[in-house]
Image 1 (cartoon, helix red, strand yellow):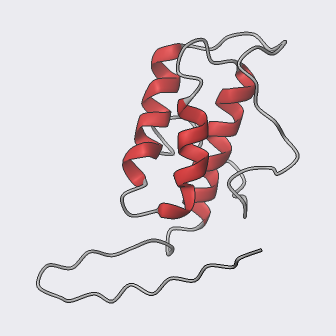
Image 2 (image 1 turned 30 degrees about the vertical axis):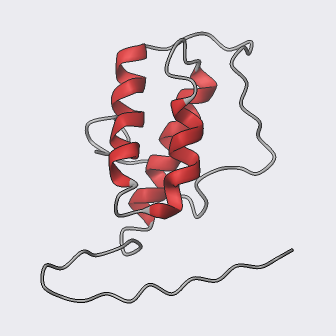
Length: 108
């Protein structure tokens, strides 16, 4: 995917989103190609089956499928750089092997 979207030699990041950066439908940035943006976000949504850590980021980016700006595309590329840097994260589904799911919830 990194080669497909032109991110082969980009620096990796440790977080998928910048917490202080807010995305809006209308911003002052120029628009990018919708088809390329849709392919990138679609690829990220496909990855959420085994990478639940990017679910929020991918679903947030999916809100801007129509008329994405350079800012939206930059955030999508950041998520892809995060995935590249954390390839050992994720869920592995193995046929015939039982799985135990353990969860934690903090009431705060």
